[in-house]
View 1 (cartoon, rainbow, N blue to C red):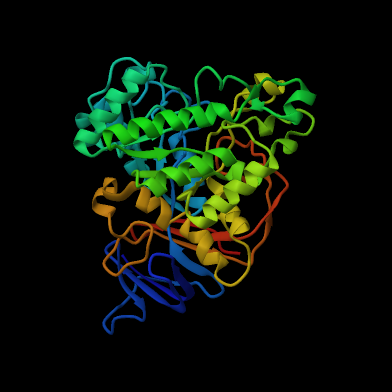
View 2 (cartoon, one colour):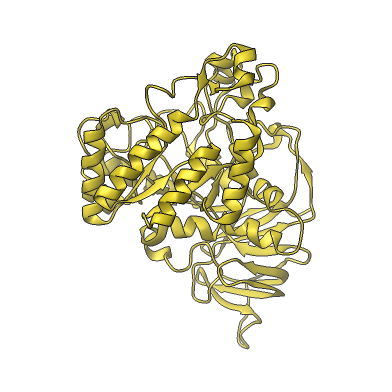
Length: 432
């Protein structure tokens, strides 16, 4: 299949490319940028006039809910949501049911995703059997099956000794460890500690639940040399600790959720269960620090933290509602909302959802390494084409995800994805 994308604004944060031009695709690869080869005869022409032609988005935190939670999300529905949001590659945590702690489970997940042929799925393997925090998994076998790293999802590991051994094992083979910074004893609340939680009578999660966990993780990373990815930082103090670890030279990367980047605990309002999220929404100073940390590069990537929740689990009193929200279809719009509308701001917004995540994954991308998250001649043709001037009022009923709950319902978001191409094939199309 040969495709000619014409008249688009071609933007690539990896190279700084920003110009009106054409892109030619053949056999799933980019064969030219800027002009067409003289003998190029396309099977299809896409007129991208007025649109941006960018690398496909990479989301480092997206739960597919399958296997085990199909009532909240099916692989087909969530991958449809991904390409509708311009996401061509995504990383899914291991807390499925059963947990991704066996090679056969990982192979089955990847096989099913490939058959659906939408976004590429990169699973994280569990650090311990059943996420029980006791026996380590066979990391070598899971990596051979397709895992790009190892995580404990949102389940804290109670034993520091087990975590140390897991990091030693991962460091020996060059694997990365992905951890949510949350102390198990202090992180049992439902809202961020502060005046808002006190007024509402909600059990709070203090900032020290995050910083104590970060101190432990960094000490162990220092001792083992493991590549550590900090998942969904949420506090100003946490950003400061990550910045210090990076300045020291520790091999640490970090991401932040669209929810924590744009919202605060005040948005909980009168017990709005759509704001029941994990990590919880914190105060304005924390949100401002996350904003700056992403702009300065302390935080490497912006993630959707996609976690679809069904109606019955969400329409409950705030403290009883299941935490989570849909986000795959909102990632690009909220990245651009953070980036702003000034000169160079769109490039900055694209960088944290393309180049930044690709650098976090690095060699784990396998055959995509060197071309994921960027537009490169000879690279894989994973492309997002969107209209930057098309604002939209977010209507949850129009989302493709099986989970329709989002804290951004009714918000006006910039951009509209028009085409998403995965491996040179059109996986999504929405032309006005």
